[in-house]
Length: 64
Image 1 (cartoon, helix red, strand yellow):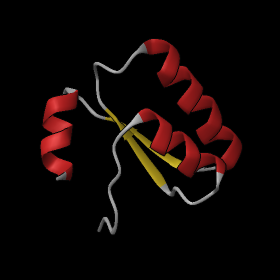
Image 2 (cartoon, helix red, strand yellow):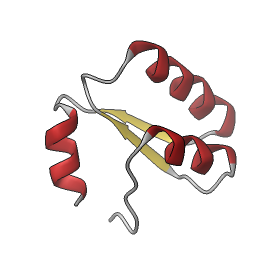
Image 3 (tube, one colour):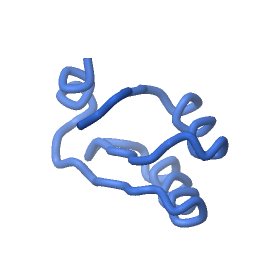
């Protein structure tokens, strides 16, 4: 059950650092450097993370 779905690098980064994010789902074609930054922050703030096998367009369609 997802109560709120947000898209975008800056928005996700703010949610993680504000400890408001609970779970992150990344698309398969996400940039490697940004993906590593998210993995590091997820580990620090103990947030759930899932690597999806779909691209960003399919993930956007599911979220909206």
